[in-house]
Length: 388
Ligand SMILES: Cc1cc2nc3c(=O)[nH]c(=O)nc-3n(C[C@H](O)[C@H](O)[C@H](O)COP(=O)(O)OP(=O)(O)OC[C@H]3O[C@@H](n4cnc5c(N)ncnc54)[C@H](O)[C@@H]3O)c2cc1C
Image (cartoon, rainbow, N blue to C red; front, side, top):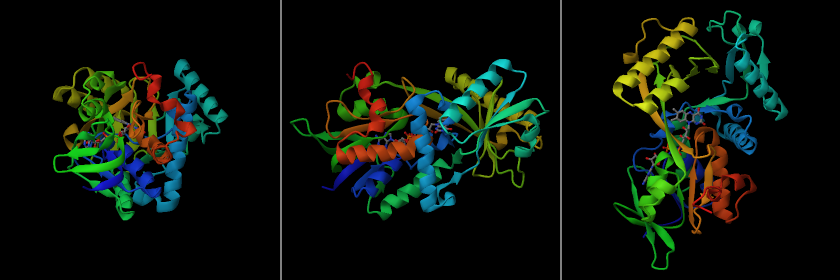
């Protein structure tokens, strides 16, 4: 029987990054992915690496800021290009006559400055220099988070998978984990796939949005399917085809207005966009008709706001993706050992693109040493009723 120090279930960005840091600690790892690497939520993510949207969230803001720092460290080592990193920065633009939102954004700016976050306020006259293709009409100002990035998340995951292999680890695709191998005394010895049983000293579940169902299936305790504190929140993203040599927008841009629009330059040479209200439409009723209507509305918003956005581009030219966000019930990450077990760990989170370098690193340290790093204290499962 093949034997590993750690088996990681799930080849999304969270599982791969955790396995990468485990292999750096000298652990013999195997990653098991039921489909192809990074093709589920990780592939259907906006993939903006940021801590500015969590400015008011104390420890969680700090965790996200550490995620950004983690990417910068990896970029120093491997370079931005192979990792799929674009250090483009991000702008929240707001109308100066929208008192409520303007005030909220100024408050966020103050909070970020208190945290020494790389951020600046941009006056109306300076905005066209930053984004010449946006029709600002002098009525907008912006919060500029110049240290933020965006990521080609599948490319990043595949690159780290290669690093795992170089270190002697194993990354298996098309390998679904069916159940745990548990001894008569209740000790988890390993896991079973359709083809084989693998021995593993420790197991990490990184199954994203299907974590609750997976816990139920793997442990044979069906109660986990309902008891595990995880919500699923769908999000719709439209990606245009390659529009080069157009420049259009350069940064991640959030319009703080109704209807909103989030847009970023995608690695394919096109642009990726989404919005909160269009997510709401498909969350209520995810039909093909609703997807196309939501996508059409996003293209219309982009056409109105971006000078040079192609007039004739239609949704038939674009790809429409729906990703399922794994969102723990209180909105922040779960990164813990399963209470009652010594060797079965779980990590699941929203903002997993931002967080993967720090959560992966901390989980690797936790699993290696058996001692929970201080930074992981707020993310235990025991904060939820039913796990205390
Ligand atoms: C629309 C949208 C926008 C987003 N925008 C951002 C953003 O801007 N910034 C940000 O930081 N985050 C963002 N997120 C969140 C982020 O994308 C996710 O938190 C992250 O991708 C989760 O990664 P994961 O590895 O946990 O999940 P996944 O990518 O879903 O990976 C889990 C993997 O586990 C595998 N698996 C499950 N069960 C088994 C089994 N039994 N055996 C083997 N394999 C199994 C699945 O096949 C899957 O590949 C966004 C998400 C969405 C949907």
